[in-house]
Amino acid sequence: MISNQILQNTIDGLKGITRTDLCVIDVEGKILAATFPNAEAFIEPAQAFVTSPADSQVINGCQFFKVFDDHQLEYVLLAYGDSEDVYMIGKIASFQIQNLLVAYKERFDKDNFIKNLLLDNLLLVDIYNRAKKLHIDIEVRRVVFIVETNREKDGNELEKIRSLFGGKSKDFVTAVDEKNIIVVKELAENETYDDLRKTAEVILNLFRAEADGVHIAYGTVINELKEVSRSYKEARMALDVGKIFFEERNIIAYSQLGIGRLIYQLPIPLCKMFIKEIFDGKSPDDFDEEILSTINKFFENSLNVSETSRQLYIHRNTLVYRLDKLQKSTGLDLRVFEDAITFKIALMVVKYMKYMESMDY
Image 1 (cartoon, rainbow, N blue to C red):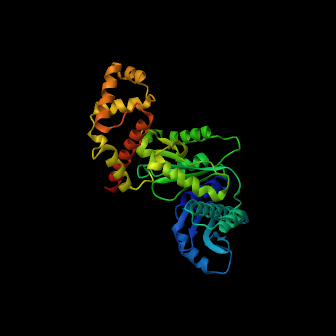
Image 2 (cartoon, rainbow, N blue to C red; image 1 turned 90 degrees about the vertical axis):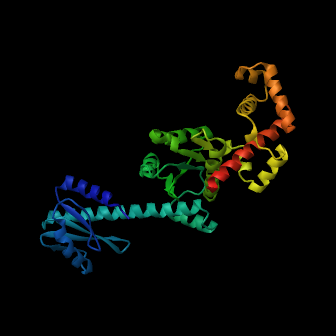
Image 3 (tube, rainbow, N blue to C red; image 1 turned 45 degrees about the vertical axis):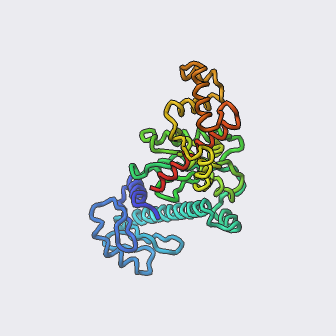
C-alpha cells in the first residue's frame, strides 16, 4: 500500500501545478492526505459515495472520484470545486494515484518473491514462473550482501540503502528480520570480487557515523536466479564467522573465511574433545599474555624466527627459548609446520567455543 507521505507528496505536487486543493480518503473514512484544512467535513459524504454505484460525483461543491486497484476500491479522491476544469484535474489526479498503486503493488510482489527466494521457500517451477511474470531475468550474475545494522538507533537504514540501489530496478533491497538488510545485486560481466568489496565500502560509508555497529558480508557470485539462496546462506555464514575470527573487520566476504568456515560447522562436543586431546586438559587461556602475543606474531610472520624477534624487539635466542618452553608444555613445536597448523586450529576452535558460549547467554 502507498504510504501516507507519498500520497501527501503527490497531491502537494499536483496542487503546485494546478492550484486545485485535493484530498485522499480511504474506504473506512480516514483522511490519508489533504491540501486544505477542513477536509473532515467531507468524511461523511465520502463514506456515502463509497457505497454508491457512481465512479465520480459532485457533492457539496466538491468533485469525488473512486480510485481502484484491480477492480478493488482503495481510495476516494476529492478535488475541491465543481467546475469542468476541476473535474479534469481530479481525473488526472485519480489516474496518477492509480498508477502509483500498480507500481507499489509490483514492488511488493517482487519484494515478496525475493524474500521467499532467499529463504528457500519456493519450488524450482515456481521460481521460473513467478520470475517470468514479474519480468525478473533468470540467467544473470548476482551476489547477495547482508548489512547488519543497529536499526533501533535510526530506523531509516533500509531507505538509506534503497536510495543507493533503488534507481536500479534490477537490484533488490529487502529485509527478512529486524536487524539485517539484504541486497540482491545484479552484476555486469566484467565486475570482479574487488568491485564487490568497493560496493560494500560504499554501503558502509552510508553509516559512517555508526560504522562500529555495522557489519557487511557477501557471498559468492551466482549465475542463476535459483542460486540466490546459496549466496544468501554464504553471506549469512560470513557475517557470523567474521564476528568470531575477524572481529576487527566491518566487511567480510565468504571467500575470505578460510578454515574458519569449517570450524564454525563443528559440534561443540567434538571441539571440546579436540582441545582436551591437544592440550591435555589445559586451555590456551592458561598461557600468559607474553606467550600468546609471541605465538600470534610468529604466525603473522609465517613462522619466521628472525622477523618475529625483530618485530617483538627481543633477541632471537629469547624467542627460541619461548618456543622451546611452549613445546615442553604442549608437545607442539611451532617451528614445525604440521605442529603450527595444529596449534593454529586449536586457537581458532577455542575462540569459536567462547563465542558460542557467549551466544548461549
